[in-house]
Length: 145
Figure 1 (cartoon, helix red, strand yellow):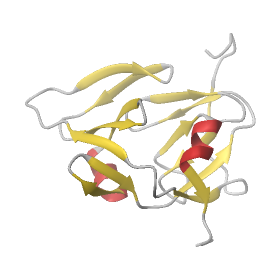
Figure 2 (figure 1 turned 180 degrees about the horizontal axis):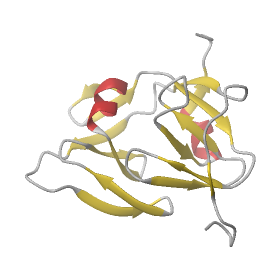
Figure 3 (figure 1 turned 120 degrees about the vertical axis):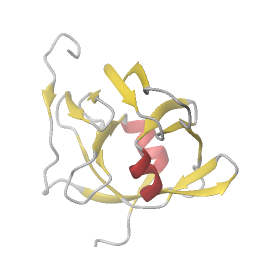
């Protein structure tokens, strides 16, 4: 629930989705969950999240969360020991109302005006980011493809 209202499970729409790129001066610190473990369960973004062995623990300017191993390998490039930058574009749209989006790790709740973000042009592999943080991290892509 968000502010007493039931959160709607959201999917992105083609008509409002735009392509963005991560600002190159905004790297993250990350470490691979390379432990003999059944995984990690934690609470974040209004719900229970799960990280599997091999996933990555990311510190994005103080915002700490996990990223699926395959997604991390496909979307990030190492700058130096423990420092990574997201190199692939993302697609995003502003949320018209509060809701929830299913992620690989669990689910993320968001407020109206936040961004629903996807690592894929078809809107799959989605998550949500607070508007001010999104605008600090991403810029519209000059490439429409």
